[in-house]
Length: 526
Image (cartoon, one colour):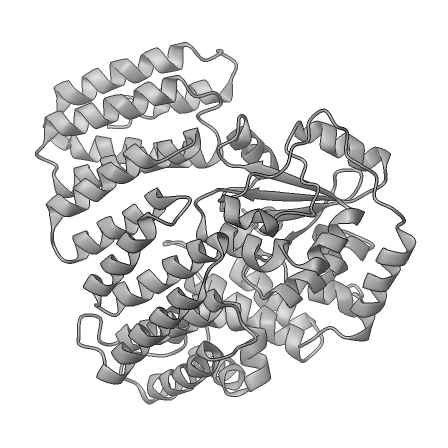
């Protein structure tokens, strides 16, 4: 569904009534870093604030402006996609004059602590705040640019934040059509349980039932199915398969509706089909046919970005793998994957966009079993990418798929060596270490050496135990503990524990980081 005159009127009001944008205070602002010299135009025109975040909030309040917070990372493909398709659009640049745009790079000093403060973890997360600092909404990064700008405009003009809108909707209160749209296009993927706890599937289902019939109700119902399909193990998400299949079939068969919800359909094709049908059933056969037809349409839809079209192509591969995970794919599909990847590779010149396009293309090739083609694409990109270490992890994954443990470990190592930024280096170091624990658990000396290096860097990193860093380290602690099951590597783990204790002891006693640090390899964890 396209938002027509209502949003157009809001945009016109914003541009005409807000007046000239005030400049941010000079002390604390700097131009956003571009990925490469050739792509600086992608961020020109936006007065990104990258200094003291509290100063930015104070400025927003003093000037009665909303604040737009973008949390991202240099290497992150979806972040680069947002830069290439949204932040460079004139519509976004014009809107940015009427709010305070704040960029937090996940590798900047204090970024992970800010992540904990704002409850953001996944890259990218984009949040709109009222001038007084109240969170209005979280914006969906995977919808197309037009829908994103419409949702941003609705958020800027909203009379109440999404939290209050949600409470009113669940209580049976009256919502305006635009408030229902804000709920439908809220970024539930990056909510981090801010609005809804463990009962997200049930809550979205209730919203779908309460909302006006039509596109909004359909999107909320689809979001409920996604939440159910991705529910954590141990949680109960009751789904009526017949009703879910009917919802999906209706959406997939409708050209406009499938285009409107392309982000949901292309990101979770197999999950939705598996949720709504049983293996080898007539219902699944029908659903697969409808899904494949819809993905074929989307893969050639010129109104979508190259990444979105490749995502639809990758969805066809996922659908073909549902009941035949290790079998050969139809030759026609393999040919199509090769052709469309080659076309996208040739047509994509912007460095930001390439980080997203090549990532999606390489995964489509890999999932299709075309590992050599995927490797060739990735290796060629290492020389062009502003963050080649990201693609090295994909090369490691391909090597692992073909059973080449040595090559996989080598790529993990190269990726870690090339990684830049404290949070990124921690994540890549832990990934390398996790690869060793899985693929070469007998190589105790190498595992200890790599872990020692990771912990050494950790000790020199400020605010190292917050948000993404914390979750990465906690998983590492669990893996090292499992590796030492039965005391088979007691001496090595003991030395690592002693090293980590030295890191923990330097943290202030009252700092929450200290308890996190001490718990990572504590004897009680074993």
